[in-house]
Amino acid sequence: DVKVTQSSRYLVKRTGEKVFLECVQDMDHENMFWYRQDPGLGLRLIYFSYDVKMKEKGDIPEGYSVSREKKERFSLILESASTNQTSMYLCASSWGLNQPQHFGDGTRLSIL
Amino acid sequence: RKEVEQDPGPFNVPEGATVAFNCTYSNSASQSFFWYRQDCRKEPKLLMSVYSSGNEDGRFTAQLNRASQYISLLIRDSKLSDSATYLCVVTLSSRGSYIPTFGRGTSLIVHP
Image 1 (cartoon, rainbow over the protein chains, first blue to last red):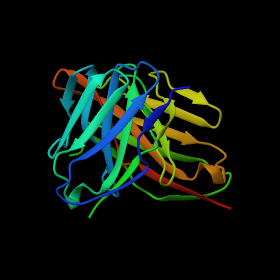
Image 2 (image 1 turned 90 degrees about the vertical axis):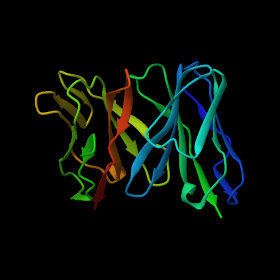
Image 3 (image 1 turned 90 degrees about the horizontal axis):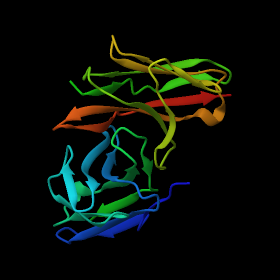
Image 4 (image 1 turned 60 degrees about the horizontal axis):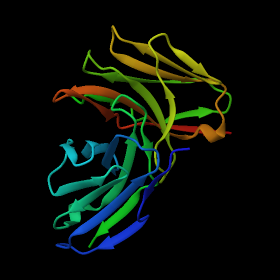
């Protein structure tokens, strides 16, 4: 069974901090995704990656960057955290962009 | 106009009822379609893929109508445990790739 693991379930940081969210998948999936989910707005795609060192902007990339140095790991970086980045962050992976995605448990991030 | 639209609900139905949700999409070239289920404060989980000829999995039936650009999910004999948010996902063409795009979800509450 596919396992997508996010490094933290809950995280509290301060404005201006650099924040790293880590995601690891164990099924050799080509594609990995980062979403944020806010009440009433649904899941919004921040970035995705279709191969090692390759990345594409999603719908809301501003204030975020990503890193994929190894196939199994996809990191989301908040360069300088702000309160409007308080959210639930979900990582997902899939074989192909047209294939079903498997999600991690999510990280509930609070920026104070 | 949002690219993937769902009625947010909530749909409030008694146990044993049949309930149906629709999801409309804007891009006629969309390739893949899925329904996910998301429980409160949990990650989305794949419920079923949606195939052109329609498909069934137990009490759940998914249909695709390409001409009218919508997919549907029918739940028969509703159970209390079906209470959740149902998310539709459509892969939409964007910058040369097909990107999975989520609707905002439809909330279902099944009561005794």
